[in-house]
Length: 175
Image (cartoon, rainbow, N blue to C red; front, side, top):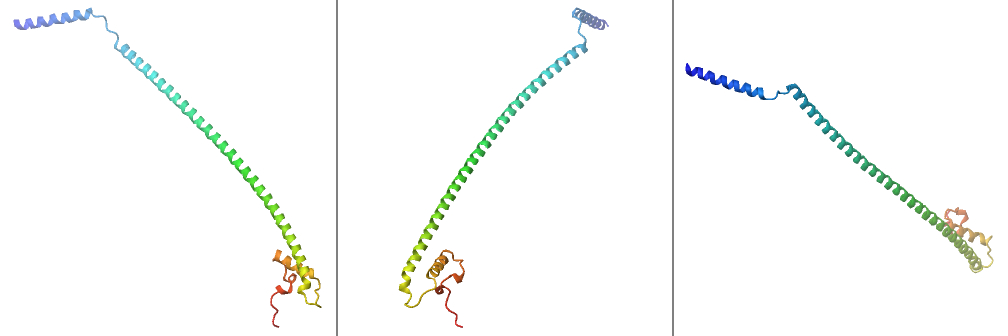
């Protein structure tokens, strides 16, 4: 029993020492206040992190928007340059077409004048040759009319057959 009592005495002394030790420590803060303080710090850190992320996102969005606007401006300028270039090319093509048309019109007039001159010379030659070709005693009603009709037919193939001379109306029909 003595051993038992000695063990109880040792435990009581240990408990008294612990109680004295705890009595010498400063009083402990309230657990709820400590928890609230930690939560407050945690929420503050989360808010700061959210603000940082928000600022970075806004900066990135602003940068992208600036790039897109710059790209849109470049595309708009390119389109305006292309339009101006196509308008210049169209104007040049119209001017070339006008010059070509004027040139062709003057060439047409020149060719018509040459053909008229040739027709007149041929008529003159035909008049000069008529006395040689027409036998004596035969006369034509209007020698200029037959030669002129023939010349007009050659210039205008759509002329009526009655305007042609007798040699071009075809073989006589065997009636």
